[in-house]
Image (cartoon, rainbow, N blue to C red; front, side, top):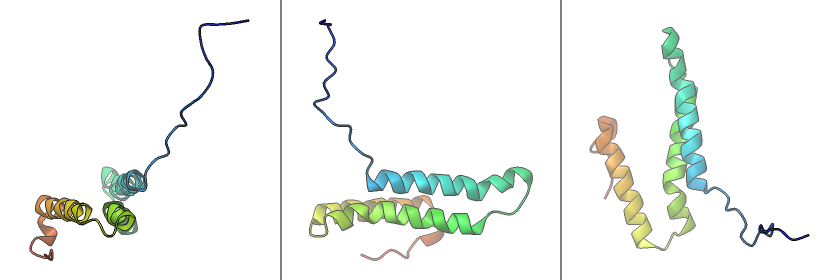
Length: 96
């Protein structure tokens, strides 16, 4: 019996990247941290710390994958500087 469809899979699905994993978990822990504000409760500091750790890990994952590539390091530095400008808590604390 022949059909017009082929059921062969020549290409395998790609897995997620470490960077996307870090961003997803950073977003999840940010939601967990801030959800108590809906009920006028205090923020969960432990979840904010976990979100910050995952965000930092997601940002430096590219540098760890290619430590000798200066363009990757410059791109990550630009991302960090943009975040520092967006959230001025760490303004002036970045290194050159």
